[in-house]
Image 1: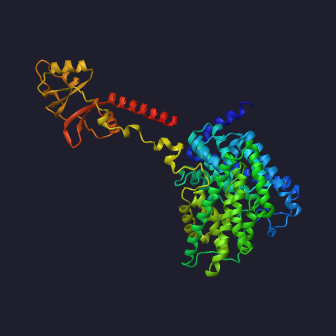
Image 2: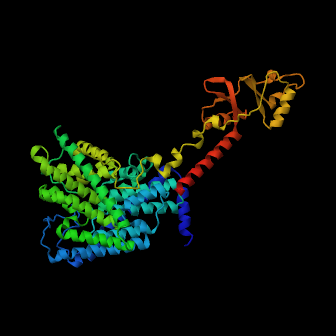
Image 3: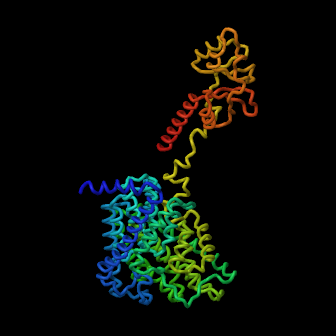
Length: 607
């Protein structure tokens, strides 16, 4: 039995993983199964810890978890400045959740703190796609506790980390390359997020886009499509193949008037500004907890949970995922008064920053969409009377997607995901306008700090884009200036002696400083040394190179010839010789440049 699984892995690797199509069909299905099952595990784990923590301390009357579309219950705003006994227990639940989550994270897998998608992105770029085996398990439990106790976080991060971690694991089992392991991790990210959001196409696109701020990991798209479809099929089998949010038919959606573009430009601008505020608040809070809050790290999520709980005594809407409140806005665009919508934008930002920034475990995708929904609804309530052909509902959807599309630096995939989640396909034009504006307004303020600018900046692709050192070295700096040369009239016997003494194979022939050719030992040996002169055997068309060209160009010329050296000539004067260059000079120049770079790195490291 001990040899069964290794033998099975070898057999699969030999029979199935030999071609690109077979390999990624097999691995994609495998990763998709884990993504779908992982999404179910996360969902039910949150339900379990909601019951164990929040409801058992008396919070059952406060709806904060809520899954849109999974229930027809209509909720009433819970905000009241009268503190009821049940509300006094909210900080108890969030503090216990933060304490338990902090212990798990910092005791067993510190890399699971914060939002899991960022950790998966970091593994792709900086760890050859390697994710420790325990990470998905710890992330699942810690995130379920955090969210189930009332912490403001999302479930997409842990779901992505489960599938990404499993992708890393099977890559090791089947002894795949680092490149394949990274692709498997990317496919896991997309499949996990696509499953939990019931958005398979958006999830697959996200896996290629979310790794970079201005690029795509194209190789991961097909594996991600396969994995995302499988994961969605599994999760949707339990909850139905439908959008995450229910959009009532009483509010027809669609782009129908050119002047509405003014509104969507405004939505993009304000969503971008709000996105900058969220990113700065989030990382400012993380910096505060890391640098200012003293004490064991595992206690910090409890402090963050306590602060969120106190805030939630007055505004329970900041707790948990927050989807339920977005759904209520979709059912009734005037569900919240304007002052409360504006307040919830900032309060949800702060609650999420406290929960995740303090070291708690959970994602930022869901809170980001909810904050964006509040931004859109606020704009819609104000602007709709002036544009009666628009509805608050569609402005809310556009705000939701534009906000997170901007800060995620993945505008295309978030647009697709948003339309899948809301079935708002007729809003593609407004979504494109607002999201791209938000993307540019936010600039470098992205919520995922592990993203890199493009493939050229990723350690995973550094050898593909790395400029050879020889490209930066010029021939004039590497050439041999005291080269061997002779006159055309020199007797061959004298030239032979000088070539042997210099331990080279040829000599430059010139008259004055005018290049005449090159003479080699082979051509001398083939002639009569006693009678002939250099002029009789020289090669009048030697290989030359300009002194301003790169050493890399010199190397390319040398490897294609049998002369052993190039004659270096002045720029603009191909008959004026200034030196020679061969493999020995190129090797010396390369070694000197390597030493210079290392010394520079040591000096920089010392400062």
